[in-house]
Image 1 (tube, rainbow, N blue to C red):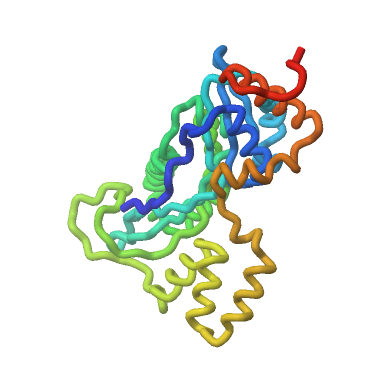
Image 2: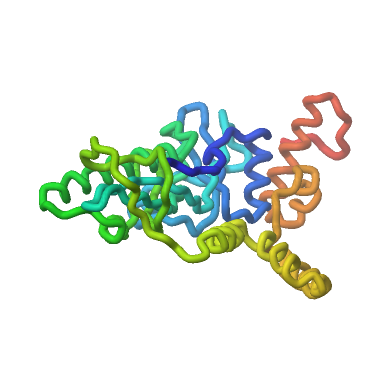
Length: 291
C-alpha cells in the first residue's frame, strides 16, 4: 500500500516571465523556486538562498535571471518537505509483519527537476526506495536472519540523493500496520497469519500527528475545539504571528505592494519596460521617449 496526497512538485508558470521574476522576488516565499529557460535552452534559478544544497551544488548553481532578459518559459518548483507512507510486508518466522514506512522527501535541485521532467516526485522516490528495500532484503536473506523494522530504520537512517531528478529522501519512521496490498519482500508463497505491532491509542496518535503536519492553522483550530472560551487569546496570537498564516496573494495585490520593495535600479528597468510596451500599444505616454 502507498499513501501520498502530495500535489505535483513542478508546474508551468501562468504569467509572463518578467512578471514571474517580480512576483518571486517580492513574495518572500521559502517553499517555492522559479526556474526559467531561455531560447538557447539555458536555465536560470530564482529562489530562497537557503536551499538544502552541498558545496558541489553551489559551485554549479545556475545564473540568477535578469528582469529584462528574454525567456522562453518559466516553471514553479515546490521546495517544501513532503511526507508519504510506503506500506511493506516484512517476512518473519511468525508470518508477515506489516509496517508503514514514513518517508520524508524534498527538492534539492529545482533546475534538475525541470530538466528531468519530473511531475510526481513521490513516484520517483518510491521506485528508488523499493529497489533499495529489495536489495537489502536479498542481502539479509543470505544470512539466515529476518529483516525487522528496526533493521530497516537503521539501514535507511541516511539521506539518499537522486541527482538525476534533483530529489532527496530519507526514512523518518517505521511503525506497525495491518493491511493488504503491501510490497512483499522475500519468498512468501504460503498464506500466513499477520504479525504486527499493536500501538496504544493509535487513532489519537495519528490524529495529533496529522494536526502537527498540517501546521499552525490546524493546531489553532484544534486548540479552539478543546478550549472554546479562549477565542480572544487565539485571535491575539494569530494577529501576532501572521507570518505563520501567510498565503500567496493574487497578482493585483502583489503589484500594488512590490514597487516600494524594488531597488532604484530595478525601478528604472521596470519603468523603461512599461513605457516601451505602452508606446507599442499606441498609448500616449508623458515625457521624452527613451533613448
